[in-house]
Structures are given as C-alpha cells and as structure tokens.
Length: 355
Image (cartoon, rainbow, N blue to C red; front, side, top):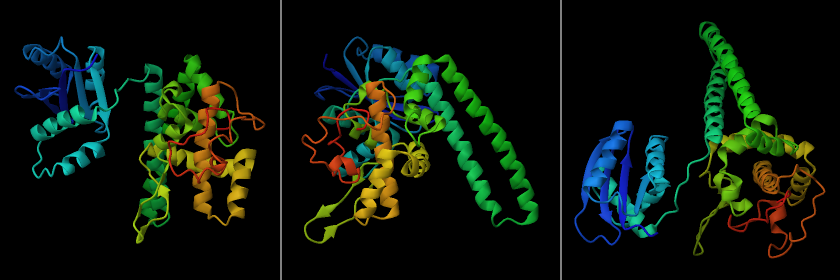
C-alpha cells in the first residue's frame, strides 16, 4: 500500500527531530523532538496518533548516522511502518540541489521528509538477530585490531618508557582479541544456518574462518542481492571513474562507499588467494601479462573474492575451482573474468560459484 504520510527523522545520539507531512505535501506540516530512547519511541507513537497518522500508511526515513537510529528504525518497523535508512550523502546532495543555506535539526528533518517523498528510497529490513550478534562481534574485534596496529606502529619510534606501556597494552589487546574470536566461534556453534554460510565462504582458498565470518556479517542476507555486482558495491570495491569532455579523464579508483572492515579483511585475504587460489592466481597472471600494477591486481583479487563468496552462498555449495558456468560469456564479452574491467557494478556475473 502506498504511503499517504511521510515522516522525516533527523537522528542524533540523545534526541531525534521529526517532520510529518502528507505524500502530496497538501496540508500543514508537523514537527516535534523526542528523546532517543524507549520512552521517546513511545512518545513518538502517541504523537503520531494525535496527528491521526498512526493508522495510515506511513513512510519514515532517517539517515544512517553511526548506529544511533537502529533502535528507532526497528521500533517503527515493528509497528508496521515502511522505514528507509539512507546514506547521508544522498540527503546532503539533495539539500545542495535545493540551494539550502541554513541547517539545523528541524530543517534537516523537513529536508529528509521531502527527500523521501521525491526519491522514494527502498525500504529497510532488519537483519536476523544471530547475524546482528555476529556483526557486533566482528566489528568490535575490528576496532581492537586497529588499536593493536596503532600501538605496533608507535612502537617503532617509541622511547623505552613509552614502549613498555605500549607492549603491555598490546598484550591486553591480544587477550581481548582471543576472547572475541572465541565468542565468534561459540556463536557459530549455536547458529547452524549462520555456521553453514561461514563454512561455505571458508571453503574458498584464501578465505579463512574469521574472514568468512566478517563477510557473512557485513553482507546482507544473500537472497536480498540480485547479482554479485551488488555485493561488490556493498564492499566498496566497485570502480569509480570520472570523464567529462576532453580534459577530465580520471583513472578508475575504488569507490570505498561500502564496509571498510570488509575491505580491510579482504585485502589480506587477496594476497593469500593470489598464491593459493587457482582462479585468483590465474586472474593475477592475466593482469600482470597486461602490465597492470600490484595495487590494481590486489583490488581485482578482492573483487573476485567477493564474487566467489557471493557465488558459494547463493548456490549453497562449497567452492569448486572446476565449476563451469555455461552462461558466463553471454552478454559479458568475457570482461567479468578480469575483475577490474567491469565499468559498471550493475553488470554483475550470474549467481554461480565462480561468479
């Protein structure tokens, strides 16, 4: 059912501002501010009821600002409303297109409501609780792993007194990382479906258990993706190139508009896959023969790994280096095999184990 009312939400740590309007923008607009907690969510429902909007189709839209809006989005979804969680870049560029010069929370909420009405962003669906737990664990592990690397970097130039404290902190971080990795394994042992997905991704040479767990946690449920190119884009590994006229012709670069944790993990996995994975190794050899540089080869290997992970999860079968894709050359002209040659992430390979 098409929404008759639009709710724009400007979320922050302690509060959120809302703007309620009709889909046709006929009639008055209503604005309010609520606390970003369970009581604030109840107050929002009461306020919507007072505005006679609760029983009507409502489309709520908010920005993906850290994880401040997760609880509110889930609450609205559980109340039967359509919810969209959008990239802040989209609303920021929408504001620029309207030449808006003033910014505050009330104006931003109204802007997000107008953006939702005009752009009709796709609806948001919460991930399963087991995947959310896995996501929390791998992201926490990634945070402490980055801290450990920062300490190791400082150790290279630290004086003896500082080095002593840094080494002590590294030992503490190692203990914390070990506990988190054990918790990840324990979680997988209690969730057979999640464990099966990790096992399938782990069957790919170059992808270890933790890399597989991070990939499963960071990618959405595989049935929500139409092709491997979407998985590549969600990892921020899709190519980005700018061409205009005869003077602007930039070299292709990674968009980096996806999961940073997944990219960091895949970078190390790609180096291993270039040695031990027959498909990735053949890809690297083809690119070297074309004179491509090391960074481009690693990026292509990372993209190929995402496609392989997508393929085994989609098919529900372990990695098979001899998988034959009969439709591989149809409509793709063989470009997908080199990974870095696809100009558009929408041109994804079919959902097979070697896609």
